[in-house]
Image (tube, rainbow, N blue to C red; front, top):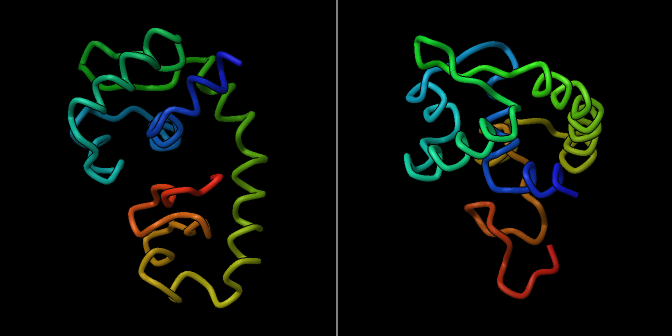
Length: 122
């Protein structure tokens, strides 16, 4: 349950995703995370550091630890399922809408910013 709580926090999985190919500094990571606010970024990085899923290098960049790499590997089947799900929802491909051209598949219960609609069970 602790892992679900950690990874269920907004932006936590995104940070792991962006670090999957190697270390990134704060600003490049923030850019890859759609310019999330600095305060939220710091909070998520602190939580992931405390959980020993990421580490900060001497040059201030962040990278996955062996535990983080294990989490990434464990999430790979979910990423493959998400690709199949996206293709099922929109067989026309990523050029179909603005959300999809940015690599996002909107959930039917979300509004334009990806937040759940008021009253949604999502």
